[in-house]
Amino acid sequence: MLYRRADLLDRGVAEAALRRAGVEGAWHRLCPGVYVDRSLYAPLRPAERHLLSVVAAVDQARGAIGVVSHLSAAVLHGLPLYRFDAERVAVTVAATAHPPSGPRVRRHTDALHDGDVVEIGGICCTSMDRTIIDVARTEPLEAALSCADSALRREVMTGRRFDSAAQEEWRERMRIRTARAAGSRGIRNARRIVEFADGRAELPGESVSRLQLHRLGFRDLDLQVPVEGPHRSMYYVDLALREVKTFWEFDGEVKYRDAAMRKGRSVEDVLLQEKRREDWIRGSTQWRLCRGGFSDIATPEALARRLAAFGVRSPR
Image (cartoon, rainbow, N blue to C red; front, top):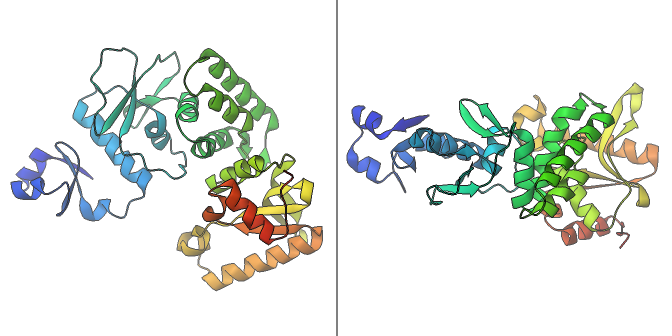
């Protein structure tokens, strides 16, 4: 999807069109000398756009950019990003003598140890473990936990089978990393994320829900709780708030709007199936079941209001 300036000129694209590429026209300029078709770029999600920026920055630097890191590395690893809006490509360099950060590249100076660097698609970036620690040190807890849960899930979940021993091994491995980084900026947040991460969370909405519930004082939380359904089927509920006998489900709009996720079913059919599932869970467990979306988990106060609408009060 990316074109160098010389390639476009060779294709007959006018100089004037490339001068307009920063704000309008058929081409969008990712960085000096690298362009993408605006019609293909416009519908991309923020993380997909950032991936193109990473590729463009690395290509333009001819390998002298450093090691792609932080949220940019998270994009390369395919981690889900909550409220992602990063514009600059993040890189880490080991030496203090390096070009300053600019409008398109943010440079971090830090030591990179053995095993901290991997290659993805020909691009050098920080390893998954190092990326999680870097993101946890520098980003809001909501974004950091979403990344950590997803990375951990790859190690501890096989289908619906959860490996608690593997989760503890991951946690111990990450504790060693945080101990090695003692005194670094944001390391306390990183330690908190390491202890709170749980690979059973399936989506960022579930991760952030759990964080906000914890901030509200809920402590006895369980994830992906099985509830036996009709005809020997099994339903799984995102979170159980055992202290108040309530289930919480993150209800993202994508499962209703995305045709691929509906698997040929109409929106009405999906809603009807969800209602029957919800009625069964309530009836068979005698617990409340509350639903909410991104606006309901934006802050602890927003989630408290949503729970209160269902008659659920926080322990605090």
